[in-house]
Every structure is written in C-alpha cells, then in structure tokens.
Length: 282
Image (tube, rainbow, N blue to C red; front, side):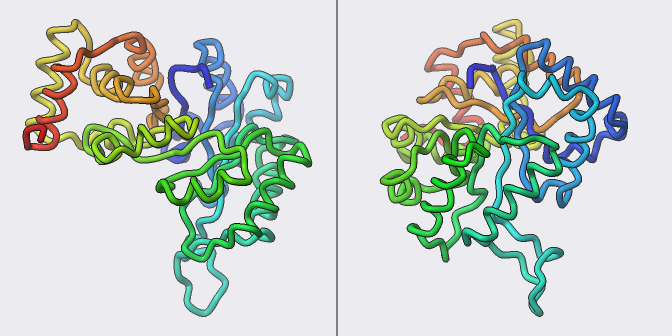
C-alpha cells in the first residue's frame, strides 16, 4: 500500500454526481491518475449498493481493474438483513457466511479477485479454527490476495496471526480518537508487522472549536490547511498509519494529496493532541 491514502466507499451513495456509471468511472480514473488506486469497500456499505455501483462503473472499462487495489470487509449483519425473528444487528464469522459474502462482493464488483479481505468487526462468537481455515482457503483459491482485520484489539490479531498472514488492521484513529496512540496499540501493531489503516481520520468533520482553532494556528504557521495538518498528525504516529478518506469530493481529495508530504515536529504533535483531548500529556 504505497499510496498516500485510501478512498473509503461507505458514503458513495451520498454523491448523486457519481450515481451514473460513466461519472463514477471518470472519478476512479482521475484518482488513479493522481496515484490513488486503493478503494475500501464493505459488503454492508449501502447494503451492497456501493459495491454494485462501483462494479457497474468498472464494467465500462474492465482493463482498469489491473490498476486498482480493491479491499472489502464482511461479518457485520445489519438488523435490516437479519432473517431471524429478532431482527437484530449482529456479527457472523461462520465460514459459510464469510464465503458467501466474498462471492457476493466479487459478483457486485464484477471482478474475480479481491486484493484484500478483512474481518469487519471482532465477533465474540468467532471460532478461531473455522475462521482460519476459511481465510486460508480464500487465499489458496486466488480469490483474495491478502487478508486483514478491522477494529481488532491486540488479543484478536495475536490469536489469528498464529496461523494467518495478516496484512493490516483498520481502526478508528484521529485527533478525536487518540487512544491507540497512548495505549501502545500502534506500537504493538508495528511490532506485529500490521499496517495501520485509519478510518474516520478527520472525525467526520466534527472537530470541536478549541481543536479547530489549534489546527488553524498550526496551518497558518506551516502554510498548510487544517485538513492537511490533521492528516499530518496521523502520519507522525508509529507505523505511518494510512488514512482512509471518507469524502469523495474532488476538492477534498486534492487538498489531502497536496499536503501528503507535510511533517509535524513532536511539540506541534503534542500541542494538537492536547487541544483535542483537553488535557496535558501525562
């Protein structure tokens, strides 16, 4: 994963200008031209419609597939898709469900292979041997290039990594979600060889006023923008976390790319961390 960021497809349906396959294809092509070829999907994004729309666009130019890195995730069952009498959101890491989810994602995207396949959320009912065999079989089949986890804690990846070549762990990480930086989680992932993928790196644009002010001050000092500074704060962390940008607005993507080389020194990092947390470093 050498690109400066990944593009998250969770909110694809929120962009009517990308609804037509040709329009979405143009967007994908522009991203690839800018060096952004990683697209982060999940089987539940838009209840499958996000993958389906992406696939419809890709079918207009199938040869583009070789330039893309397609990631998808599975094991969350939204309440609307629960077929039991309880209609409850739950997790399903059974081999049969994961295999069905993989095949469905491949069909919606119109591809024969996913570059990456992730377990979306830690399942308290996960059976290690069953999941291990299922993911190993996916790799052996060639339908998945590599596997990883999402939202996993150290014990989750330590157990699964005994038998599986895990590539990454996708976690919430931002100035408003700093705990992995303070609790040793990032160092543990780095030691385990797991790439950190940071979802919601800009906290959904919900930075409080005090943090907005601090970001503005740093941005002015560094001749950058607050968004660029917030992403640079992430890059300063151990393991060089790779942000997953949730916005599909071209202007926001261009802004993020323009600041991809921005670096923060330690005092600036701690200044922003303190502004976000509201407390001084211990």
